[in-house]
Length: 238
Image (cartoon, rainbow, N blue to C red):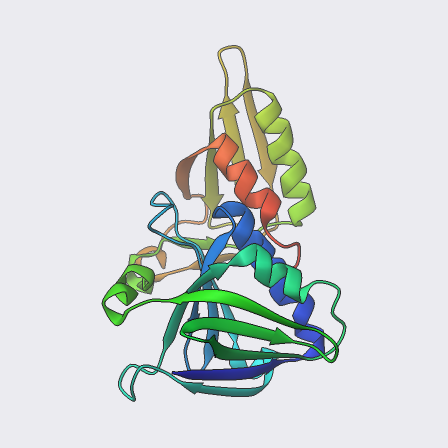
């Protein structure tokens, strides 16, 4: 298997932020899946069964040169496990194009991350094809109810920090088709509700004809939601 790509100057910081995000939520490690069109960061589902994270980076928007020879013509992909903190460090403070290469040091595969002056070689574990299905999940639009664009993440982080400080264990999110998002929490002595309006909501086949006043609700662990939202890079709001 072979992989080499040049990460363009303007995309280095965006990729680094995504890598840091993955490392904070997944005990410093992440899975990289490389396809002919995408460079994908995944959490290790073997250590985190309660959530699934997938960050897709489009090849044509992020890389200059991009060459992949995967397992076979039919399965033209590469899956590797590596230290997210090592990759983040290799990308830190770089303001020029980065060359990424899959290399070998003896029999041990490495991901080489090279700038003009520094070459970082990160050990990786290649995943066997029989393991790939553990890291492939497709979301069927026919099964979705609503999509909503979140407000400024810093505002959302402040709201969730305040809710968390009330000692609430759970928080309910209610998204309306009118573009309103309600954040509701309860304690033994109080009920807190925050309403965010004028957001953009998207409908899916199951809810195409539903009244705008209807809401889709979910209840989440307050601490875990706060940790998740706090670590999302500020350039992503959907």
